[in-house]
Length: 197
Image 1: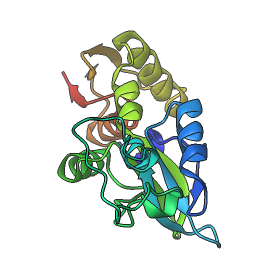
Image 2: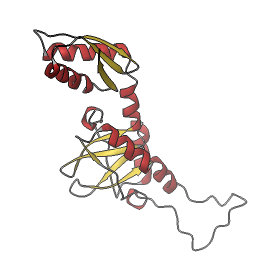
Image 3: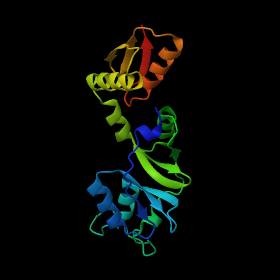
Image 4: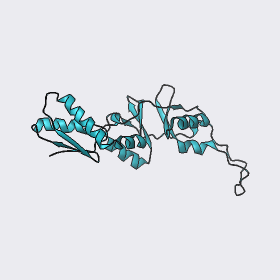
């Protein structure tokens, strides 16, 4: 499965000069955990997460008895540019989903911008991946069967069953056609494996 099959194409973006409060409101209202930060020409210059914004949202409270405020302590930052990360993990639309998952795990990130020619064209989050994998076996079975019917309206046909995201195609139409059927079934978001019997 490729990233473009699971990414969100409606991308909430921010600017470096946006206030922390504005950014928090945007992420909160859209129910997202991170947003790409764009420069003056629409180029990706960073990413800001909920955690980044929370770190920049508060000044120390002098009422806290254990807190000692030093005279040289700076106030909390007030703009996205001061809390965003500039070391951004990105992928392209044709990145394999397994590569994406490995990147998310290795870099411990929840959301990754998708680039085309240096421009942000999508975002993919762990939630997007989970939603795709949450599709029922019945839905996957119908989608795979429909894809095969569209490709082969006059036949051949295969019996399709799905269990826990794994597709079983029963019947053989020759090695070449079976390979095409396998490939079609694998392109359905949520399918984890395809086998013939």
